[in-house]
Image (cartoon, rainbow, N blue to C red; front, top):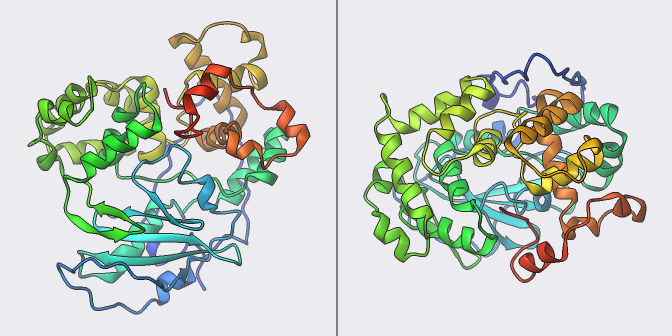
Length: 391
């Protein structure tokens, strides 16, 4: 049995960008109990057609990932604002696309492990889909070890982690993540999902699961064929010009736009943020989301009014009562990194999730009383749509 850090899937270790030199990084504990992906290396390849006919299996066979609930809990990972392409297709079951063309469902099993099932794939190489899934789930990073370091740095995080374990940060395709978060700007979940579904439908159809249609995310070349007028007609509003402008900007990049985006994973965080902000419709907060959820920038902190409230209540109480500004946004990000180190973005994600009404129900009364209160206006805005605040 191989550990995640020695699995053939992870044979090309990624270099995690270091946090800025000034903030200290908590030392990640070296544990011998790193979760394993036993099944990934033992699966027998199936005969996969190059262009399969998509079908929906009524009783899929679930293959265990060998990731415990403390490493991955699906309800705290998928419906929390990281991605808008995955759908809930069953009881504690979510379905989406990894590696551009592999349609897969994930389900929390009765033993708290996570099972996976590939519905169809356009690849002839079976092993590539397991590698794509492992990469998407960021399994090369032990959530248990990272959180142990957070608990040492912050006693409140230690309490929250007991109730909200398994909130993992995903590693999405950069182009897919970029377009999603341009759609998310000053928007609500219902409209974001509608927009992302429209963009997705421009790609190749993969299949139907749980009543939802799934597609490959369209290539940059396919996106370039869509006009601003078409996007406006589909309800994108002013974001239509940003998407068209961003696609045009990416196509003009030497070596190609998708390659340019992937190369941002090798830059320091400030450089990656500046590069993203050069694209139409991308500001510092959207850039930080893209950096955290797709570019291996694990200490990126997306700062909006909700994160600002968390920071002023627990990390920077001296700023309580002041208004958020670009300068103060930088102070918030620095405060998170000082406290949590090079995986500060993962800590921020958990603290953000803890403020969602659906998750407050899981907390003890003492923790519930210590969480940030939402304004009546904020609650009204989300009622009937979602519990994830989006700005």
